[in-house]
Image 1 (cartoon, one colour):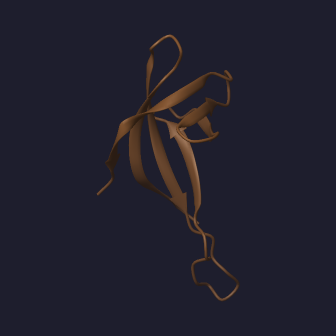
Image 2 (image 1 turned 45 degrees about the vertical axis):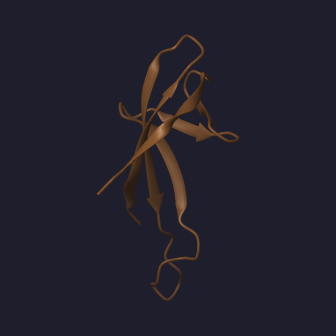
Length: 78
């Protein structure tokens, strides 16, 4: 199982600091070796810190508990 970068976006915290967030998808193989039905999506900061998706455009930095809000523009990985 390998995580593939599928997108990147910026998010801001309450103080206005900008965070670069990377979005990954990981397929889960089934017993017959084919990809599973629903890929798992995970998020990390560009510096490697884990990010938890909350509701809508809100995310939480796991280490600090800081809430960040996604900005509207998303860049897709090619």
